[in-house]
Image (cartoon, rainbow, N blue to C red; front, side, top):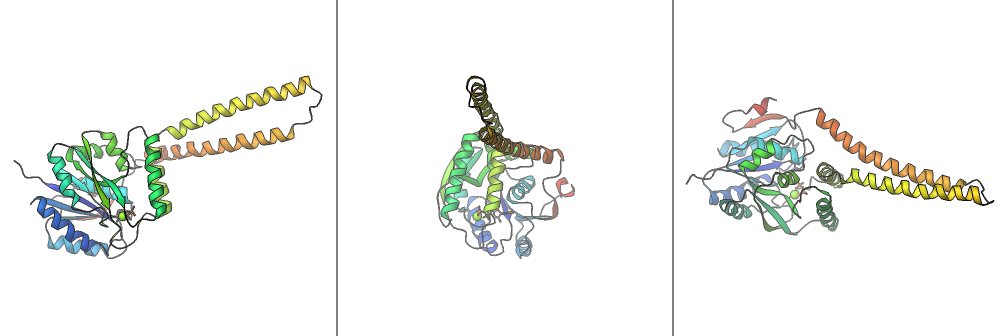
Length: 319
Ligand code: UDP
Ligand code: MG
């Protein structure tokens, strides 16, 4: 049987404190799994010592490859860059902060041998996160599933193993708003979950402050669902129906009673109400149009400044 070539992609943004530890643990686990693996670090425009650490790791170990992006493009783009550079039969995505235990990769590989194309990690327990993050993540995944056109497994992150075929499928999905876990659900194939406990970050701080989390959630919902647009239609219809009743009432008062004082109150409220709803949904539509605009520019998803350890420079590097 052909020996498995395993690729592991690690996005890193200002992770100087964790890189050496993560690296050792990954190498330890991977050596137990297969003699053939490549460890691809994506430096997502770090401003700390991360690039130097990565450079050193690469010099000492042939199996390490590094892609330096030209600036910070964000977690999802860093992963995308990684997927474009893999050459393995199976590809694992893992965060640099060891919140996802590398030991689980063994189990993932076993499931892959059983014939599954995607093995995604499901977090049963998340230690070291704030109650707010836990609550918001839970609410988000449940809402996402109600709204989205494809079912997205609950409580999964990007920690997963994918068959090369799945990676190739992802590569031909050119969208800019990349919500990778949704995209992986969309491609289909045979998928299976493995559960694990998510540990606290070993060092450093989360690169997902509240604002970025909200953006990320919006990306997930807006790029996988037209429901917000459809709500606009229903609320619009309801509003029209209500206004119709209002019109009948106004006519009735005007024609059949003598007490038709100028209806300042009702018209004032109606204007405010309708105006408010219109503004909300103009916003929703604006979000989608903004996305169309961004897609339409056809910019590359990321730019590579330098790459180390790859045999031939891929075309991607000169985009
Ligand atoms: N990351 C990245 N670019 C960014 C933000 C994060 O490559 O702009 C990486 C980060 O180094 C880590 C992973 O993405 O390996 C997940 O980030 P983090 O642990 O900060 O997110 P959290 O686990 O808190 O959601
Ligand atoms: Mg983390």
